[in-house]
Image (cartoon, rainbow, N blue to C red):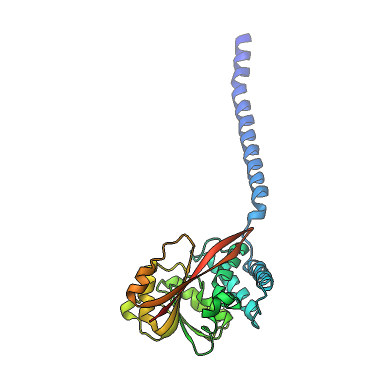
Length: 274
């Protein structure tokens, strides 16, 4: 009887231990899930309107600090642009960190540099190049930097060349949201041989290697037209290639743009077609 009694007790220990283990694992899982929710609660994506509002607050502060005369409706247009970027960027690969106001503000301010630098003596070459009636071609417009930003800030007529379907669709929608009547989106793939020399200015930011940019720009520009290449100071610029395809004088304009808590050095390479 003794042995039978203890065999029954021994038999009962196993399910009790298993039940305890199961309960412990379940409670541990619930605790871990709760901790995950607490840890990540503040990391949920911001609403596009909030991203846009914070972005434009940063842009406005920087523009006022440099004494730039902000055109009427520019900030409201850029706010709608930032909202569209935050919305589309969450679904397509338009730009890095589309929900980060500091990052969007950096790209907007960098795009504006050709209209900010003429406020300084060294930017004299850029004065008036985006005036009424001027035609501007932006190569590889992508997320709208700099094409949509410059179109919002000036009265020139812009053609945004972007062959990637989703990005061309975004540019079309964003231009409409920003009420930009001076923008046309060209979604065809056009090499230098397909471009007509009918533009006063050609711009590019993160487009291609400099020699590719110069070949396309010289094909699209009228005589004495201006090519503007956004660049990093340590980027090879191959100005010999610019001279070889038909550009004369070239000037590098250095500046810096706020990116979060730092200042990022940048360059505008300004070349005039012979």
